[in-house]
Image 1 (cartoon, rainbow, N blue to C red):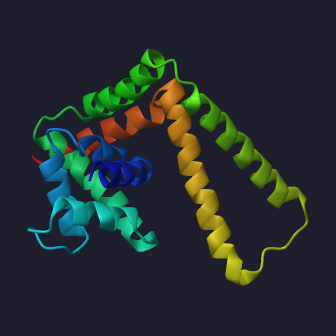
Image 2 (cartoon, rainbow, N blue to C red):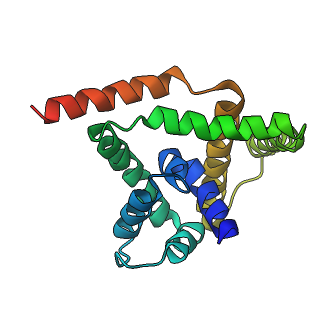
Length: 180
């Protein structure tokens, strides 16, 4: 089940990082219940089945999970749970592992993914090859996934953006205005 949990966290890490941080931690039960609910699964669905749904997610499911991310953040804020702390501790544990083991795998993967991304983007832009209509959606989805991975890599090595802080402040403002 650990492999399935890690695979689910990997998928969620791209589309719903707060939910990914919650899985496997003290808020896992709440996160799994919320995910099961948004995916139309029974409240009694075993965790491994919920994780399998995440791993095998189609674009519509990924969109639902992205929407749940926002709702989950608002719920956590109402409960006074520090989401930023959850995300930071998750990222910090990954960084500590890298340092403790003196493992360069993450660096090599990050470097390779960024080079691959650049080559694909440049290849599409400057090759003159026209993408057939039937393949256009697949290519755009693949590039969108790579965009998300690049953001995750940059966040891992350089921290979160000020845009993320502004978004958090905006959510806080919406919560405060909605509770009046």
